[in-house]
Image (cartoon, rainbow, N blue to C red; front, side, top):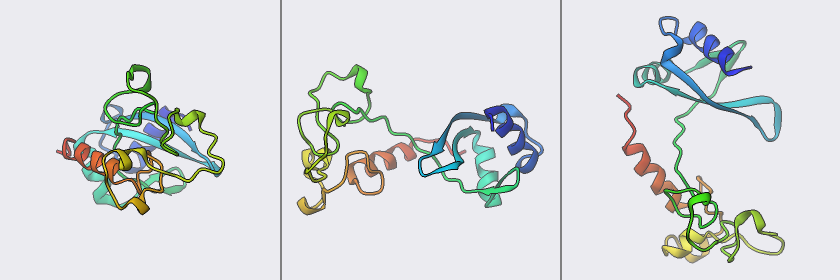
Length: 157
């Protein structure tokens, strides 16, 4: 589906009294392990978000779709810290996979255990519980804290 089709279908099936100005398709991407499914990030007004969450379901054509808030935290993939992008980074490279002195994209990963550079840098978590990447939203307490801080600043109306 195109972004325009998604907007039209969302409105027709879920938000009949809204218009296309109430939502914006930010991007679409295919799920890695499933070529039939596509994930989509949509920006909506606080009122539309409230209504969608109250309904408990989003219908799109012949499917019921899973949904959740998408909270983006800007993370540099050169130094793995937050608030800037790699193209603007002036810090030395550190790998988000193994904590080595190279960028994550250059990591061979072979024979190296996962070691979160941010948990190591900020002495967070038990030393035995740093076996995750610096971009792992489900395991990295540093990244989880950044996401929580970001959520506090979102206008949910």
